[in-house]
Amino acid sequence: MSGFSALLFDLDGTIIDSAPDVCASVNRVLKTMNRPSVSVDEIKMLVGYGARTLVEKTLEKTGAPGSEDDVDFLLEGFLDSYRQNPSEHTVIFPGAREALERFEQAGIKLGICTNKPEATCFPVLEALDLKQYFPTVICGDTLEYRKPDPRHVYHTLDEMGAARETAAFIGDSEADIKAANNANLPSVLVTFGYCHEPFDSLNANALIDHFDQLDDALARISAT
Image (tube, rainbow, N blue to C red):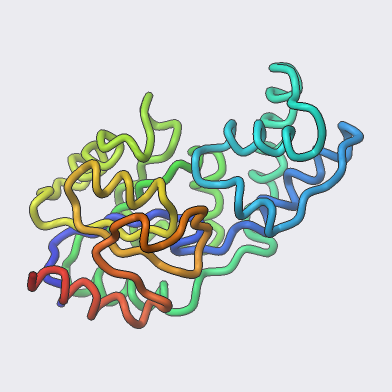
């Protein structure tokens, strides 16, 4: 179908639009710290490099950069709130589930390579009934390194039992495409996620505006 035997996916901004729930959980804790709230659009510009980086950037945006105690407080509160409310406002992007079902039925190995921490990744996968598609999920705190470090990609492929030569990466951000490039994997960039840099600066092999376009994009890449 796709020309690839294994596909790696990012999660937030790629398969799911989780920014509203991330934003709500962050704001619950900011309120207790007497800091202003942040908007969903602001959160979209802060995610992608793990939860600790998210809260550090949030503190910078809502006032003076916080102390280590402030960072730890916001991080712990955010993770606790998000674990309890993983999918109240989160939705699966149109066509994503159908694409995953097609790939699964075609016998393509599927894995998630995300910078999202395990404590929040698995609850949202379960809540949205997505875990069934991904026997392998490697999160941002599973290892001592994360995207764009290529070892995050390599480890995910190894856990999948997949060859690098027949795999591709699908993501929405600069961390995803840089990780794929660093690992010498072809990549597809979805344009509806949380990218912080111009699309054409990232050198993805293909761009798609909807999951309905993914099969053709992968077929074109594999044919080159």
